[in-house]
Length: 527
Image (cartoon, rainbow, N blue to C red; front, side, top):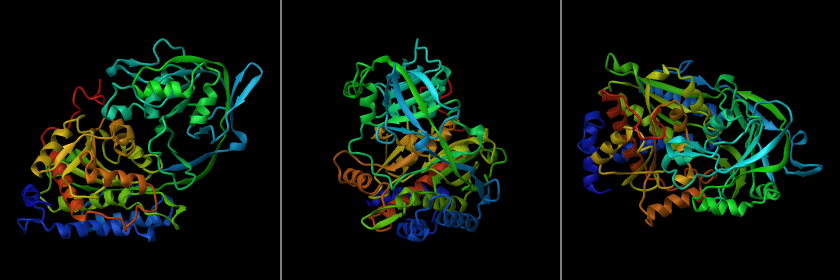
């Protein structure tokens, strides 16, 4: 790293009293301290930290011990812990079926091969309902898009292409496609079920480590899909089969969507007959781990900045090159390590004015369930949570010159992040791959759902650079694979520098007399 950057970061850290004994922080020592947490959390001993396993319990105990040793206060519902009650559910394929019925002719859709049923539904027995294709299925007043206008959807199952038109950009492009967001408008229009199909990814998504059961939060007050009777996803083969009698094809719809054009809206002939039989398999309550650094200001200490990262990973699964342990070093032992080290730095003083919550979240790999539970039922007053800074595989694989900040243009947190980056000679970047939906694929989305401004981070790069190649090769080869382990190249110094920047950003937000607000033009601002 060039000397000017090292000196800039050193100067930037002085107000936080970080490594104040030296004019230049000892980045090597800081990197080793950060990596020590990664080494334990991503070790084979913890067996991939899947919730409900001894390895996850050991990770919880480790984070709790770190918080205790730092001196931050317990802030869970039971000491440092906030148990998250979950039910494991699955589809009983022998008692579930889907078919398009036109008169006496039935066209069944083969489960898994052509259609996948989700157990996340409101039980209510078989359905026999008309079927209508609703294009993108979006209702976005801010973008003057309403695919539901003048449609009678009462008692119907809707089919939509899970993409976004060309004029929906930035985080909204991903956020608008979250099913819980879509369902609000669809339920209001009278729909009883949804079937989606998605453009094929290029390159294809990494193969998961085997069947992944569905977990649902046990608390019915946190249900995000109330009244949804059918929740299904078509494969490309299933989409072709379902569309065969409609006068439209998968290729036609994909071509229009690829060009950013409007999609047709049309009814299907006949009715959909569907039965979804759900089996409840198990109940567990893996905890979030929550610590608090109390603020120094008499009034502002009752407001909270959240620094978060998910603790869980995929556990043990399908062998790849003889390895069955999905260690999750970058995803997301790295983020939890930065939560711990940021807590250590901020606790060293001077103490910020607002309080800061440090949270190692459970159940992100199960569907962001730990953050959903905390953001909806926090252990502090929800209205006093002013921001979330979230880390999820921020990928310190090369020197920190650029920092991609998801949510950069949505709230005043973006201005704070720009200021801290400038202070440290690091260039902030917008999300360069919005179609990957990263803004909605991690825990910050649940804070956004509650109206709380949030940011998430990735190490940035420029087009056609070696860093771009490293980043994309990591996603292709190591994401959700056993090779996301301790043997991969990791820039420990860069990780330490990012963690210091995270501490500075949290302190800046915590000391600002004004709490963060959404920009008026943000799609997430209250309207």
